[in-house]
Image 1 (spheres, rainbow, N blue to C red):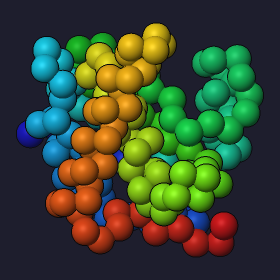
Image 2 (image 1 turned 120 degrees about the vertical axis):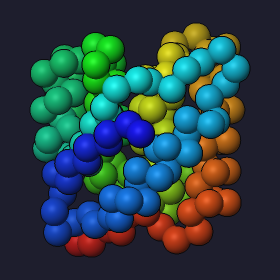
Image 3 (image 1 turned 90 degrees about the vertical axis):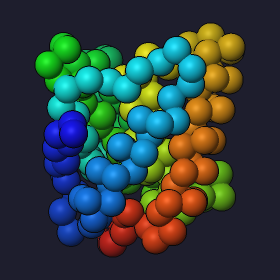
Length: 154
């Protein structure tokens, strides 16, 4: 079973059940579109505040602003790292009629799908990404009836 390391860069603002988050990520393995494989090796998930994700965004993509998710593909030993913006999830969730928990889970799924080889640059690829994300949210609804994340002080 793959190792999944989780870093909470928002202590006091975001709490979560690590076992449930790991189970959600493992459930994503079964959802991958045909022809894609689950990323191999250990996986790292970083839950970041606006300041931290803006720094990562600036350092690696030259866009020093908060964002939803940034994914770093691994090297074969490590599957990679998924950095998600918790405060972005709080802000954006109401725009889409989601809870912040569901929005942040969407970001985790989106990053995971990138690690599995799903892209979203072209319109065709973006449509595949949206379909895979919808499946991931379906798994979230069926298997994880209680929230994985809780938010405080936002």
